[in-house]
Image (tube, rainbow, N blue to C red; front, side):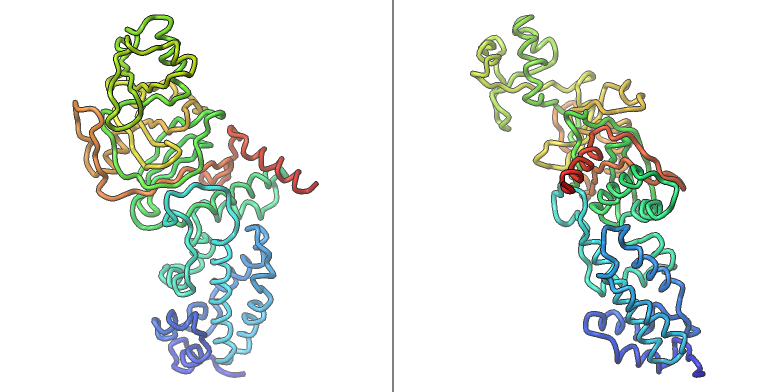
Amino acid sequence: MSVVAPVGDRALRLEVGKRTGKDLRAFYAGRGDRPLWIGADGRLLPAATVLLRQIETAELDGLKPKSLKPDDLEDALAGTRRGDIASLARAELSASKAYVRFVRALRQAPHAPMIYESEALAPVLPTAGAALQRAAAERSLVGYLQEMGWMHPFYAPLRAALGKPGYSAEQRRVLQLNLDRVRALPPIADGRWVMVDAASARLWMYEGSKLAGTMKVVVGKPETQTPAMAGFLRYAIVNPYWNLPDDLMPSRITEKVLANGPGYVSTSGYQVLASWADDAPVLDPAKVDWQAVAAGQQAVRARQLPGPGNFMGTVKFMFPNEQGIYLHDTPERDLLAKEIRFFSNGCVRLEAASRLGRWLLGKPLPRSKTPERRVELPVPVPIYITYLTAAPEGAAIRFRPDAYGRDALSAQMAVKLRR
């Protein structure tokens, strides 16, 4: 039986360097051809076995395991029992290639719809070198693989749950749907980022992988759902107006004016505008033909002036998007005390807007008597809005009601596809 030289031995490194293809060459050259999957004693590291098991169960990820060549990896790993340098080098490179295939396949796997302001917010497809460098930088390669650190932190716990017994068929279907949703989220990067889960009506603030704070939020009603989307928080508006959505204009303004007279506009803290243009003139409510507005023959806009009763509260946080969604303070504190918080027209109302502002800016929000004072964030902060009806909570998986009916809709689509 041959004696296995330690990883530092020149022979093993030379063999790895000789066998390395061009896609992995830069990674191994950068580490002097030192193996990643073979230990200093010349034995296979446990991480390689963990990788093989994940690939063999890739159907949990919606992938076809055979496409990831698990048999090739298993044969290469088994060959290390011979203890010769050639077998060790083959196993090393087979594991690296299999790992890269798996990472890239998961990043390319179908995921639930998500509106991205920029492709920079979506999960990226790493090069082979980048994927391996990220793994090599970890203190524990086994831990990194078990936690599937190239995915969002929620992914591995949901996947693990899907692979365990004890869940009903319906729960397993919901777990799979939420894995699809989490695949739309990128892995954790350095810096600050915000996540909002509409299903639990909650917001989290993160600094890298460290939780910096959380709070309740109010999200969209089932008929005005908060969409799954990602953007960059770029600035705050202190002392904001509330620009009434066009669909609220009849009930909030037009009908009230017809019933109470044009004086209702000013006494209720509103202004009427000719349009939503930045330079739109403020109209005299007494000179507006409100019958024509009610009949749809004339269009006007309305905004609520800043103040204690303003629907936006004291501040709103903007991540510009075509859907008109943003985060904002709210005077309706009673809604935040409810367990079920689906009451907005799509935007996200905050339990602690000033705390979020202080965290985003690194200092308290400025006070201002001027309406619509814009305050730029020091750096744009990514925000992800998702919808998780199953999510990790401690060591367990928490299932939540499908308030938006998205799980049910997916089930209906699946039935149609089977017909």
